[in-house]
Image 1 (tube, rainbow, N blue to C red):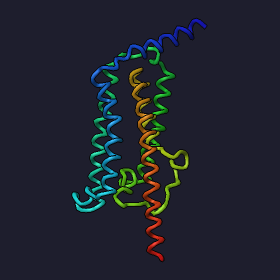
Image 2 (image 1 turned 90 degrees about the vertical axis):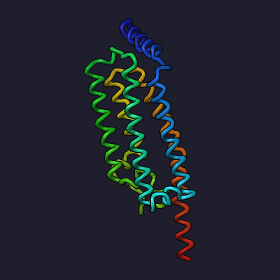
Image 3 (image 1 turned 120 degrees about the vertical axis):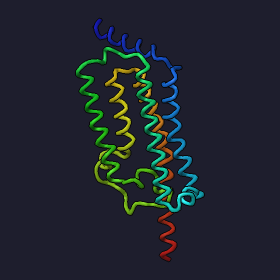
Length: 210
């Protein structure tokens, strides 16, 4: 119908009006891409050299220090995301009750996934403790890990999308796409290396048992 075509045209036009050179928009992309890249590099260096363990006086202190850094940088990422949205045009078509309800639902479900993941894993399980040699005794299979493999990353992405929809922001939706892609790439490196860590530990235990 003509009404649907007009709505689609408005949506497409709103995305073409996104200012891709705006400072906060670029900063948000830079932090979103840089943060997982940085923590993966640091974690692998720790695994290979134990530099944070030596610097902080033990694996747990090193892990807590890295957790503090990652959490602090994540707050900066969230701030840049919100500022990027603020400095871009809104799409009034999204300013309706249906979209607000969707945003509510996404944020609530995403928050449940993130918080329940944290409660299951704890600080060391959440913040790369396995790279410090702090391994979990068994694989976590309870909620939310019985629903999906990566509830923390997926939940965080849902919360970003909820914010973008609530603010009626085409730029925010594009940034959520960046978040999604970056997390998928990070998982390729993190999951494979985590399997390597636990496989190596299992081999050491077998060798010790002999």
